[in-house]
Length: 507
Image (cartoon, rainbow, N blue to C red; front, top):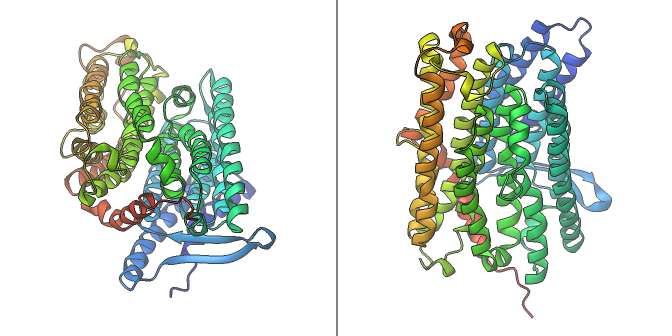
């Protein structure tokens, strides 16, 4: 076994560096920025180490984990475990946070130290959530993430930031209450808060149905699923660029991650019973929210609604793993493709949507305008930024060769084996996404430069490098998706086995 507590390091190292910034006697912008860059760079290095260690141990059948007593009275432990899904999510977190911190001085002009502290704390909490194997520990990280993001929006947001931050907090806090009730009930029933004990717990259909509803409130708000999506456009619109990137690339994935860790393995009979209503909600997110994006004139709101629509593929892939009522029997290949497509869609959406918000943040930093009508001809004055933005738009549309294509294609293909109506409705996103994305790009970047654009400059090469990294990763996943899928095969297979195993008690 390994000796270095690498999982705990991935969680607590950013928190320690955040405390260093707060406690530094002569705090200044370069100090916080430098320490933030060092912390995220170290996290990335430890993440590479974790990938190597995980790969080496998995070949021997050893699980990378840490398990220490925590709250003995409740039989709750400080139990961390890294499977392939957690490894991929930690990698997404490490890369996104590194790029956000490095680019923060180009999109945030005041009190950057304080914002970097919040971003480092958020990274700690998200890493803790992805690695938690104890439900109570999972909830602590899940709930704690509300505070730094609330402060991020409320402190550095735009003119309507107070209302947006409060709406974000109320929505997500109410969802957390339902999650806590469900966890406490399961913990008392299993006499343990270990997720593996939850998975083995027999539950009646009534119990599963109530638990499913509670989980959907908690995780559906975070994703967000229809009809819980209304907080997201406001939060994205008012949040600073760094906050928007973290929100789109990582915080939305926390909800989807909860589906994999709680909903599918704990309530399989309830999900199978209510499969069609759940699929309908996902299709509404894809089609209806995509249609709403067509009407937007605010660039950030358009990207935000687009984000909700594309996250619909993540949830749709989850519900498609129950094959009997969908008509493709027990074909394991298509079921596996569905859940792996859902998982890789999380990753590709994280990079594509995060890149769009960061690229627009670099534009917004120069003129403080979000209205599409104020822009025209930006490609004439900022050709490099325009080229990067176009590439991210193509990934958002789902052009083959980009990361945006892989997950959606896998989900649509698996849906095609199940039901033709589901396939046609899901595939509509290709038309809708191309319509609003290309319309927005044409209005903002083509034509003669408007008065808003004339005084702008192309971004500096140091800021441009962060966009190049985003573009390179999007291209890598698009051309060689196996670089991510190789880590998802086993967790997807395990999840399918749990998801297809009835939890109804046998008498």
